Structure formats: C-alpha cells, structure tokens
Amino acid sequence: MRLGNFSVSLAVKDLAASREFYEKLGFRTMGGDAAQNWLILQDDTCTIGLFQGMFERNLLTFNPGWDRHANTLPEFDDVRDIQRMLREAGIAITSATDESATGPAHITIVDPDGNPILIDQHVPRAGR
Image (cartoon, rainbow, N blue to C red; front, side, top):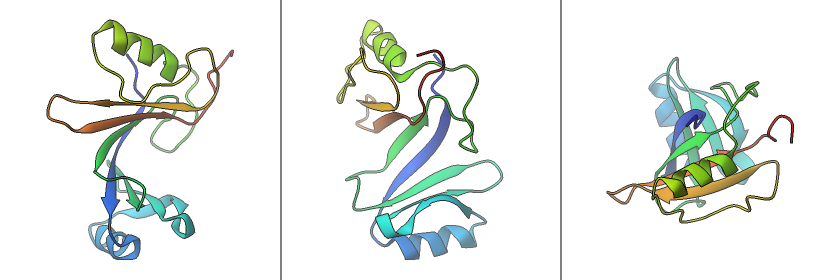
C-alpha cells in the first residue's frame, strides 16, 4: 500500500506564533494560506502542517499521489483503493469516501491508541 507523502498536521491555537516557533527550528513555509488559517512548513527532511481552528487534535497525514514537494507522482495507490485495502485488512474507516467517484478525496482512520490518521488525496488518479 502506497500512502504517499507523510506529514504531521498540528492543531495550533495561534498560527503566527506557531509559524514563528517552527521557523526558529529551521522550517520554512512552502504552501498554505495564512488568511484561511493554515500553512505547510518544511525543513530538509520533515513536513508539518499548521492548522488553526480546523482540527480538534493533531493528526498524521498521508497524501497519495504527491511527493514531498506536492508534485504529482506518475503512479500511486488511489485513496479509494487504499480504503478498500484497509477494509479488507479489518481496519475501520471513520470517515469514508465514495468508491465510485474519481478525483480528490479523503478518508480517516484511527490507530489503536486513538491517534487520527488522514489520508488526503489532492490529485486525480491517472487514467480515471
């Protein structure tokens, strides 16, 4: 199963203060929209998302179809295929997507310790 690019999405209280803090750790903004209360930051090896007022908890995020620079991969597992594989493996989907649809979609699952995981595909699947 190819889940795509990985990042940690942080539920922050003050976007500007969080951005300033992570910039001091060597991160730089590579995307997002501060006016909509979210930013994506990276250092040489890590990607984090800062989201103010969008999530209740921090979550792990995977982006099928993307590399770490948000470039579309030529081949990847579509989120609907991942959803089917997870169900076949006995993993409960807490927020499902329509498997007959195409294009961007997301699903959520929760690990055994209660950590939410977002599988968020922003690109259409090649050939669909």
